[in-house]
Length: 194
Image 1 (cartoon, rainbow, N blue to C red):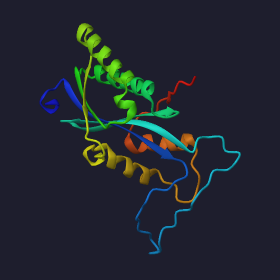
Image 2: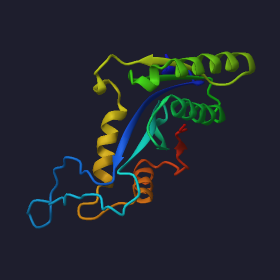
Image 3: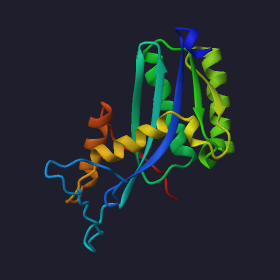
Image 4: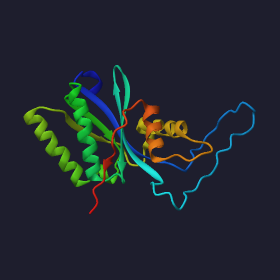
């Protein structure tokens, strides 16, 4: 339905962790014909940066081509970070003249929480009353990641940013990920802590 209307957009949402140390499973050719050696890395005691970075992503499937938008998180995915990501996505879609976001995602606890459901309900009431982008959520069946087309994009991204024999900083991971997907590098969404 979203693909038949110009003011609707189909967007697949998911979260992923980008490790600074763990190497993805890879197969690669080398010019010498020898196996590529990925060096196992461990975090140094003086390293205060996180081991991995959480990232929200949305893959928009539009008639004029697919597009990825990303936002990193300082912390982990939780309900209030999810609503901040959705609010950011809605602003982007409103600027494009969209009225409805058909949002497809899995059943992660931060997707189906009462806080997120309540936020979406309140947001949709406001969008209907004042104009704006409404969100229609479509939950994928439990344990079926192959139904979300963003999943393989994460794997390809992890392979693309891999550093075979060196360490990556948080800034390098963020820069490489955004460069790989052609996304703007924005400040991470902060997780509120009590």
